[in-house]
Length: 376
Ligand code: NAD
View (tube, rainbow, N blue to C red):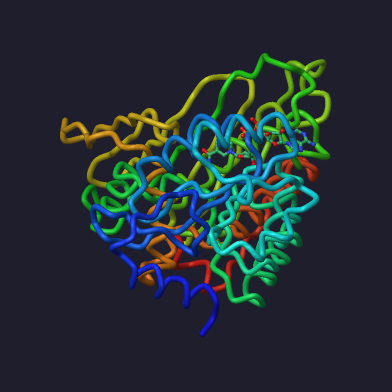
């Protein structure tokens, strides 16, 4: 019996013992509900881990914050105290590989600058841990392939940090498209952008750490929106880049627009920028329209339709829903809502957009294998 499975069995069998998150086990038991919970280690304790993921992990049903990996020694005690983490579950970038011996950690969640996603995802897979990789998946398609190959070889699951696939507004958009509630989508528009003015030395403005600018950051949401907003992968893209603050955006793209064609005849347009605040999805169909505005921030999201109805759901942490969905994929074989193939597909589109810009806006044909079809 594999160690993880053995410990899982042990944990289930010993449900009378009160387990807490600082007891190293493959998983802990939620004593109230007697359910197995998977241990997650966050790698990189920046803004997203600190203000979104760690708080969300206090409310998750199927996983919990079991450990952290940080390159900043001062953060070790702060996180240990705040989240009651045992010293044994705190790693730095150098000793990270020894996490393979730690049965308290089932999932490694890579929340580092983009240039470090491939390295840490692959090392996590080699340590026998399931992997969640933040967006964008990596610096290029080649790195996406390397991450997927490592996870496949080691027999671990791979999920992207695409939180929207777990939240209800996005599910509603997918339902409108699937059920043709407003008929066929003819035109889809998605904007994902924010106005960046802070620290000019931040890693997001440094191409060797980020891999690109607005496109790889917010643009990924816009790409995702036009895909689930039509229910199709695009068959071509043409793109343009605009720069108005070259002194600030020295190394990375500021504003990009791109146009997509889809097999059905639908067309799409995206705008992504680090120089404007906009966050929406609008779909014009042959019998009406629907929109989300905001469409992809942390929520609460908002939406409306041509029937005069509001799209409205109770707000819940998207990150909580996302991490629970990935845990359910591991524990109960539930669908993987954002698999590595989806991250790679988006990176293929990102590369095609940059290629189009380099070729003066020339249309780039896109071909996706059938396995990229399921993940709309
Ligand atoms: P951040 O700058 O706040 O944190 C980055 C962390 O990486 C810090 O703890 C920093 O110490 C560490 N780090 C290690 N090496 C570094 C280096 N060479 N330069 C800079 N920092 C270094 O960034 P963040 O906002 O937490 O983003 C981290 C990742 O999460 C990115 O890939 C980003 O795209 C992704 N993200 C996703 C979402 C989402 O909604 N899914 C939201 C925010 C960020």
